[in-house]
Image (cartoon, helix red, strand yellow):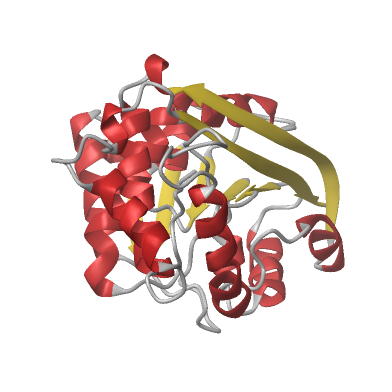
Length: 282
């Protein structure tokens, strides 16, 4: 579960930064991803798994750990992400259990991904241009009785206390408000309730849960690196709409030479939510 999320379409110049944040997401949220794989209402242990919009492999490797007999096909639009995933698989000695497929999942015809008994899509469905078509494709691909797990973010993660930073309290809230318009225009399915859409595509909904994530920065040094990477990406989105004072405060948080640099704060935490839907092909 990548995120902060594995895109189906991407800006080529941003792939490096995206890979970094996906890797950090996997590192910081490893326990939460593992808990989702434990929760899945599977009837039997899956042997053929497809990870749609795999990013750099957070979900793929969590599933391989959870199901030691399984093989995974990781599908993503970005060859750089798949190369990184392949390198990780080799480092883990799992390269014989992973196949990577580069594909645009917005295309009408998907590549042949076999007949999986589990399909996993973490933070990728909301990027689809035609989600209903994608859901039907997954339904038709699964074996009867197979499971489709949709994992989605409930918005951008938060890192700072509400009264921070001291020179511009509430900065993070204003940054998120400024990105709402961007998301409404470019990713209209972000934050959607996938339950009714899964049912409309012929699935039987087997379970749904919301996982609250709150990880103190003191618990993991990766939280600071994650915050730095995420706020850099956020700055690029809000550069046109945020006030000059807020942009200056954001620049201080991101400036490695500034006493206000985010990595110098002792009060960082990662706060977000993940929603999961498990749907069966009847």
